[in-house]
Amino acid sequence: MNNKVQGVTVGDLLSYPALQLRLIAGGAGLHRSVSWAHVSELDDPTPWLLGAEMIMTTGIAVPRSAAGQRGYLERLDDAGVAALAVSAQLRMPPLRRAFFDAAEERGMPVLEIPLAVPFMAVAQEVAAAIQEDARHRLGAQLQVFGALRWLTSENLDTATLFSRLEKLSGYDIHLCTPQGRPLLPGVPAPDASVIPRSADAPPTIPGGFALPVPSPGGTAGFVIAFEREGARPAGLAVVQHIATVAALQLAMVRTERETLRREGAEILAELLQGALDPAVARRHLARHSIEGETVLAVVRGVTEEEVLGALEDQPYLLLNRGEDRYLLGAPGLGDAIESLSGAAAGMSRPVSPGAPLRIAQREALWAASHAVASGRVLVRYGDDVTGRWLPDDPAALTDLVEHVLGEALAYDAGHGSRLLPSVRTWMERDRRTDEAAAALHVHPNTLAYRLRRFHELTGRDLATTGAFAEVWLAIRAAGRLGLLD
Image (tube, rainbow, N blue to C red; front, side, top):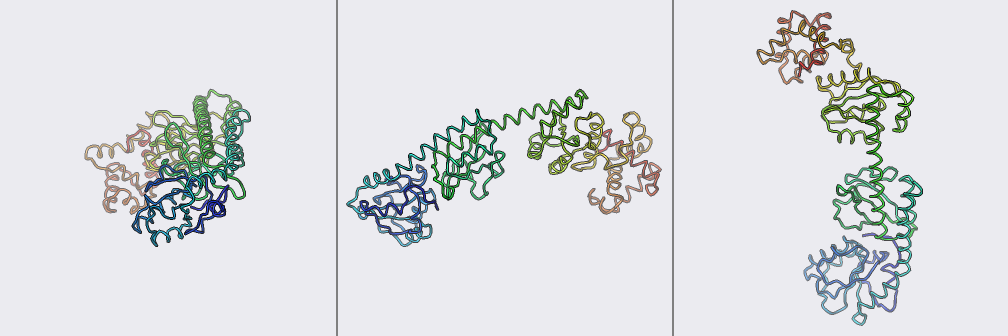
């Protein structure tokens, strides 16, 4: 471990004449800070350590083999132990070359305590040396407790709150989810390499601490605190308090987001019903950071949680209607929607903020149906310039489909064939037979046969412009009626 100089260091202890300590390995780690001196005769005391301790031992638990001694020292170093102090005689086994090599490689100081110096004397000297630093840490803890008062009395934003906590604690603070994403707005996420693998990981990391941020559903993320150059870090207890503040702030942010989300759903429902005055609607949208032109999207095939994850950094309103997710936001919503695996979404043309959404809703629903029929993630209304001219009357759509495609529909139903899906796929791919055949997983010759058979049944030659346009409109109408998969 590579801790910065804070309070009393290993090098300081070596300079105290009364202790008569002697360095026997790991001189590169003399700058390590020491928070306590403790006697342990366990072969693995690490579950009970917090980091920065000096472990003293008579040698009872020190293994005799070279591999065992190396493993013993590495366990202590991994747990953040500042130094290992061994008895000069008593029960210490011969220390192996592998032990000394590990100490030098890791910069883990190994000290020798003479038999004439009791372990208690070392512990008392360390306690006295860190007393002044302890007073500083206590003061920092009390001030961090004051952060709870700031939250209520000063209404600080998250970035300002944690900037104050950094100055008080002597640490650079980072917050992240278990996956490494930012946990709270305004507080940076750390490098992924320092994020613990679990909430049960040791709190000490090189240069600081990593602690879980609790939440009702489990660990929400981690606070990573790195010692600041030239500052006096206040220790693990203060970082634990900061983790508590982070948990409280996260709960507040989530509550506010949930309130805004519910409010947004109500606003969107009223906009769809045409029940809001445009000026009032614009004020509501501005509260949700939505300004300028908006689009309405209907998303199918994904859960609400998936939608929320994709739109995490964008302003929007969300309304659930059955399996459809209605979204209102800036035109840039489309980029986020296209990242949703398995989605089928339709998007209206842009409308002015606060304008009635009756037409936009019709456009988004049509485009969503087209996305389902074509297998595309997102269809923007206007991508298919012919579909917009279809009538809204289901009876008129049915007449069109029956007149143009009736024979082919009956043939597919009676023979279990796929003439119409094949024709649609071929048209959607601009009559590129090889590409359409690959999409249908058939040989190009098979697709060519299906196109000829369609011509025979319907009497419409797709090589002519008039027949092509008529069939294309009829296929769009059949998709809107749900007659094509």
